[in-house]
Length: 155
Image (cartoon, rainbow, N blue to C red; front, top):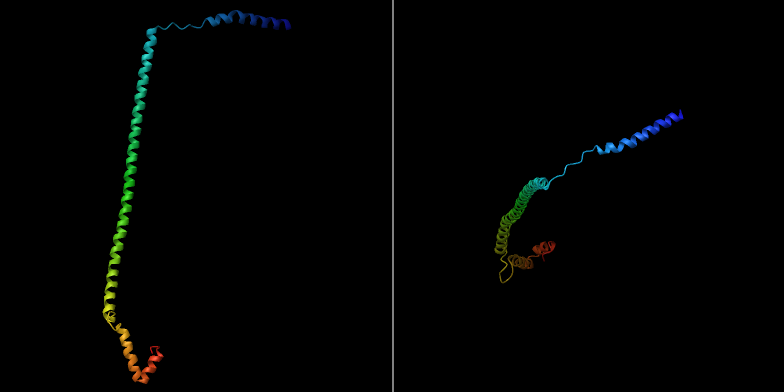
């Protein structure tokens, strides 16, 4: 039994040794390619590369156009924002001026009225000072009136 197995293994080994090299020869050898065929295939490859390059170039041009458009849009938005800020500052300045102008006019009117009522530019002093002096002189002649002025801390 051992010998039968050994014989079978031997037969398979010899069979593989004899017919394996023959099966390797069964592969087809590629035919020789002529220079003309090589040149034709290179021309086809070059045309494919030119087409590929033109596609890349058109894609880059489209991308550049989109970037230019987005840059222009950003510039427009930025310009609009600056314009709105300047307009807001202008409105604030105008509103402030229109709001302060009546107040200044009223203060000037009040100053003129006080100056006229108190007669501050008189050579003997203001109207109130002269009136107080007159009351003091009268208090010198009238003791009851002098007591009233002392109670008010005017004498």
